[in-house]
Length: 328
Length: 281
Image (cartoon, rainbow over all chains, first blue to last red):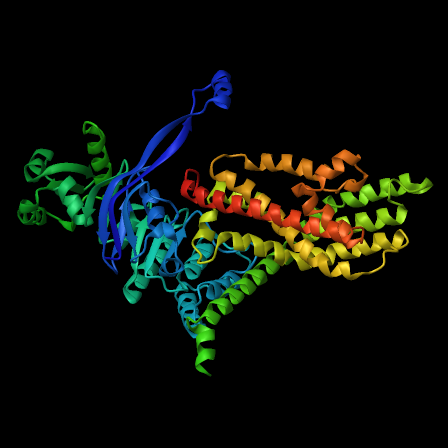
């Protein structure tokens, strides 16, 4: 296993005080802390070459988990092995086996061209000169940063900078790539480009990719396997399809046609939406083929589509369920 | 290429580790120098803010018009404060601000992901800035010397020891700053504490007044404090005012403080990393 996590726990001490001057003065002498469980009893394993997404609401413990895997944070309890190493020891062989890209942090030197940082990484990560040249050429052409990498980083757009960050992070050919919100703040075209690049890197190099993102589409498009973390606990581990089947077992069928009455439609399935001549119905999986035939038989039927519920809706429902559970 | 040569260039022999360390340090130095050149205007402003010894010089120079003050005549003051200005430039460090900001913002994470100790990055940043810093400060020092009529201090063998005293002074400052910066792992305003240190440094290091002009009882204490070890001692050594036993005592004081603060910095750093992450990481 490339990543093995058992019983992982992490708490943070967060200072707290009431509002107002009196409370502020009191806090000068006696600070009160609340222990917050960021991660509780987390266990999972990842095999080499997997693409895995961490999903969960803000403050769920995704990034804390990612940072413990990357060796930045010390776990309070539990066992952790990444690439055969204990991450928090941060041994050179561990650091050469992984890479962490954070959408909100940069490793590139701000006032210098990115290529200076690339060259620096070549030496620091002890990359053979020929390997370096070959990888740099490959990454530069894939990400189209040939010109960009020669301008001072401060003059680059967010997307250009992130592409250069990816080059810097991948020059030493890490076996494990941690991506923390890599597409944050980017336009759709750039998100797609980064996503496509990461997928290709994973396939061609067999590297394990672990991703956290607020953009569900990033995760849905990239990760065959997702780990849903909420309140620091693992709530789901599996494919997006499996999660969707569990939370929203119904399939969503939509078609454009001359629609019969709402009552007639309701006999086919639960009506989710009617907009002009388009109807969306939620239908049990075993009835899908019968309902498809019925819908295609409607006069002027076209654009028939069968989908799972969007991941956003599934997640919303999952977390709503979690909040309603006693003690959750 | 011989076996040893191959081992040295990519292998795992003892020479290879040393060679690799040298390459890494050189790369860090190059990157730091490139950054220092990019920030040369900011550095010039910083140097202008550290011309305080030259202001002190103007003051003491005019006070000594009617005759020596203590054992300092006008020429002695010139030599002392120009040396103080230049040695301050040579031993300058800004780890406390950079490192505590990196800890508070979480930018330290970037350094932690490299297979090189993050403190080495800060150390090399200081060294890399030296050429630019000296290119800006030396002409200023020489200009003051020329305007004040030069110095009469005779060169002696003691000058051979100056580089060692300067390096120890720089390392001592670096360790003190690292200690204070590491407090940022637990508290949000660690740099205010350093302001206190800086205040004491201004008075007790010999930055504003040569410590030998302090009242006799005070001199004996002040000369064994870390402040004097980080400036006054190398300055007095440079201008040839110390006897053999005084030089030995000066070096011993530097080494003792360096070991103490170095040990404390190491302890705080290790404990701090365990606490890292409560903020931004």
